[in-house]
Length: 490
Image (cartoon, rainbow, N blue to C red; front, top):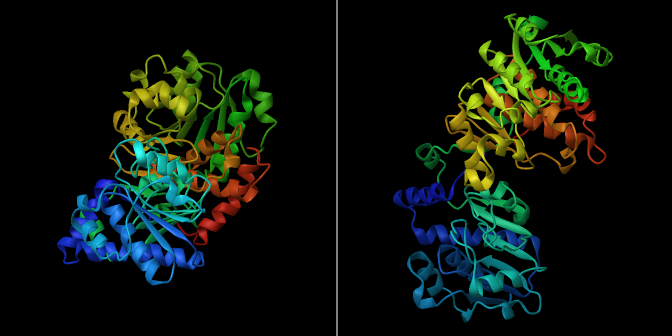
């Protein structure tokens, strides 16, 4: 279940299911029953408060309250709004509730009951206020089970609209939404269960979702494994532009490219830095490059299939010139760090030259220098990455704990296997090197970005606490072995 459905797509899935003959009340009953099953599997009966909102999420809550009551649980139900204002399926569910309906209020949480949060679903469009705000704040420190999403978390962006509770468990239906895997929403959901409520899989054919959770099932079939009759030249020759001062970045990236399977890797570096690079891995070729003309000559060799520019390269006109030279040479390019920042004053000079064989790997700061800050670009992380890929014509890998990879055609993937230990100097250089190694072997830039991020996360997880960037290349073989052996999708 790698597909992620937007709020609008989930509404459509419901509508298609109802049009196919399943009634709205039947879907609501199934949703409530799924929540009750998850709750009763984890907790013994004890006082529970079900908080219901004025929409269908609240209708699910009425079903949950009734089924828990029938199972012998002591239940109180609080409604935000009035029963007479309920409409449609929610009104039907309320009619079936045999107990009293109290006004939603923080006092309902006195005595520290288990809280079922059915106030607002993923489609909430404005910040919480008034009683709703007070009630959600009162959930702090209590055990909360969220129906669909914790109230206040937007399903498309994962952003918090004012305030949201920390859930121990979130039960959603049919498919997750982007807000379940994007930060900060992911951190507030706790354990996430995706329940089957009778929506048929075939509705996905009509919806054709374009956002997925990253995992091997998406790209494994196109992974460039070595062939029995292959040789190093058939596995691509990657080039890393090495800087003269921050030499560690290029060295990390070059070894990572080799570990990812590139047949050969050359570091092109200033002559004065040659001894530093030459003292590194004996598997890496080191080519001293005096000037831009010499770099151009290096790229003229058609056997050199992909180029990484940016890590440790330095910000300025020299890096700009070499990025443009690589693009002019028609090479597949991975652009990171200084290669992006060097165009901060005139981003169109870069963006207008890119194509689908290029991969940009910015963190938020570098992204802002090319495309504007989150406030300037507008929208959530997923939307911004998509817009950037569309504008540039390149694949955009917007890094973070919730890395988003977006293609110019609108496809997007969210990665969720990155451990927090990856927040360390040099880890991004390794990631860029892995992507370079895969692209050098002929892997499509979007697939390579997805595979590189997943392998990066798996390698980091194998190290755990104490991770430094130098650990990552050495852990890639185990991650690759796991992938080749059939690692499940995340």
